[in-house]
Image (cartoon, rainbow, N blue to C red; front, top):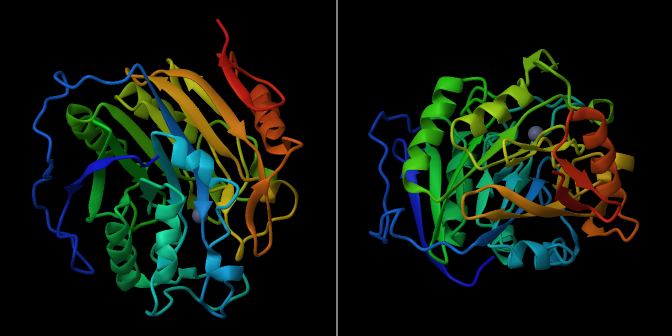
Length: 365
Ligand SMILES: [Zn+2]
């Protein structure tokens, strides 16, 4: 989106400046708008654009950055993310110019460090909120987290997801208050397995926000894991979540939209009790550091229209494909939409939606 960003109000848990903040200070909502939820007049419908992992290139261990200093990476997608009322994604790495990698140096060890001068690209692409609850946010330690938070704040992009820091955010755009939070599976993230905390955070947002959007990073990774399983997923010895249960729990407790990422491939979408869930949006803008072959290069933007009560009306899966060093590029064959359609038909019983070959998502009655 971005006609008018009236105010960004963060709900802060703990000091947000110190590198290792963990104070138990009371959550505090800061707002420039004193109208209550009941007093605000909301538009009849709103549009929400969602994307998966964003890692714009890295300066560690060697410099791998896209051409033209990244200015073309969102070229084909930003029209959609800018035009939506709100755009959200997952920032898969630290945005910092120094620091020490917290990971080992083995062949399967990846540390992602995006240069701070790339931060305006996120703003330019229309992002309003980015999740930091993922397995790369702390690749450069608390210093990297503090730097990421600082540059996002400078860009006016809200964020959350790190335990003891920004627990959630409220973003006000064109008079509509969006409550946002993010959960992951790593020790330093707010965890989707901690359902008591998930419920508390969503309930707090629900009191002040018109629309509540929940992000999660979870599930096993890679091409063999594009089907959404039942029950808990374990990958590399880690509990990566019981994601159906988590997403339903969020909606049962007041969330309007739940979007996921983490498997690096797309998964099914669902409308549950009238509310939209994307189980994995896959890689989105990851020109380096990730396998982009076959379905790993499938990079959708999912844009949905919701009513002012947060319920799903219709949606569209826009298909993009990635190749190394480039970013998402338009795919006129709609391969990504057809993939999500096929996964949804296979993995969601009694689905309330139908997806056509162009990626249009409609309710079936
Ligand atoms: Zn990840």
